[in-house]
Image 1 (cartoon, helix red, strand yellow):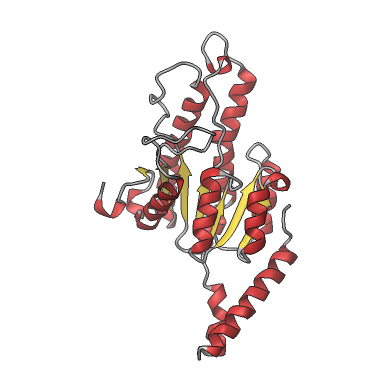
Image 2 (cartoon, one colour):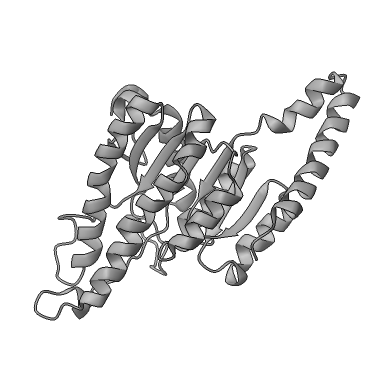
Length: 272
């Protein structure tokens, strides 16, 4: 259920006029009232239909952001669609990391729209299984993991780079895992671990470019969050705390720290 620009514009205009009227009643000048909605910052989130991505959408909406919530199959994203129906600033778009045309379509649809925060959240995680185990490797699965977890986020970042530049203070945050390169000490996760290590490394180069062009770039570790049906234990981080922590890191990360990997509970301003 990808909403058209016309629908988005009508809904956004209605919200803007409602805000303007409220501000006018409070004594705010007419021109300032109309400009109030235009001042809203914008975040684009991949994989926003569930788990961490949906929690990012919820918390950024609560902060007053315009939220472009993308997912592979909007028609099946019931919870996200219901949330968007109740929040005028949330728009649902189809974006599939395996389908570059879908990425370019969304980027073109929002051409000229500044994006302040881009969150590369969507990824393929599975295992343990024999397809990721040396000796029984499935190379079609290799392609699927690396296309989804590496090529996809890179394409999203490239396609929306002009939108981040238009912000004047754009930020790219790519989620990774503490269970990446060496963190899962059993067989059956090879593609997942290797693809995460690869996308982490790319952020170093993207960060150097961002430092020259005024865009913040970082890697985020959400901690151990129950997003795949796991039974939460004391070792798990509540999803609300994880996302709130990552948003705090996004807000306090400086461009001098570009390419660095942060945990959800780190404090970039304090150097932790």
